[in-house]
Length: 94
Length: 155
Picture 1 (cartoon, each protein chain N blue to C red):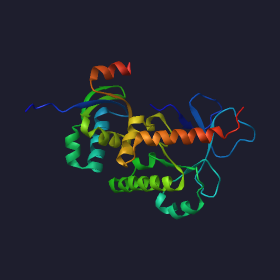
Picture 2: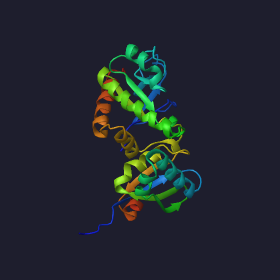
Picture 3: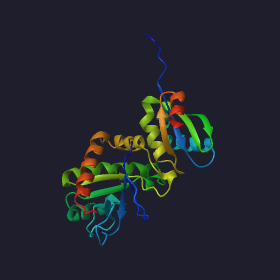
């Protein structure tokens, strides 16, 4: 049986303050709302940060949960765009 | 993609913007608008609901068919997990109430700055989390909006 790598989505988010704080707030909110197991499955990671825009990645199968967590995070974070690859996400943002 | 936004009037008219007014203008307006109120007794296009559980019974008696019932996301950011759970449950109940009473659920960001705005996929994720089909919701929302705006006298 083929051991396929799980699909990911790259999200570009706009926030105030440091990128690590924004990502930690999203992870914390996701854990509060959907539990630790779902949050671990989501594998939310900081990829790249530039100014107040940050690229994060998560597992595709948990995308809706991550989007809900981003929506309900305080301080507010705005999802700018998302894509299956960083390259395409950067193209969209430029 | 969000093609239209609701905003308070700022003296300018922009394409794709529907203005949220507290009272109907005295003369025919040059811009599309909706009357928004948080008072159940007032006639309005959109009723802004803060606590569905509190106004549930009043809403059943007083709301007119075709009225939009607005829920904003902004207060849910400040809630704890239990509060957010109740907030989602209220949206589910409100959605079924809207269906039975001929009203329209209006899910709004409640944003007062660019940092509080929500993208289309985020709205869809919130709707999916409430077991609401986003495509169906936006289709119904579009028809409701067109019907409401077509009733307006504009110059």
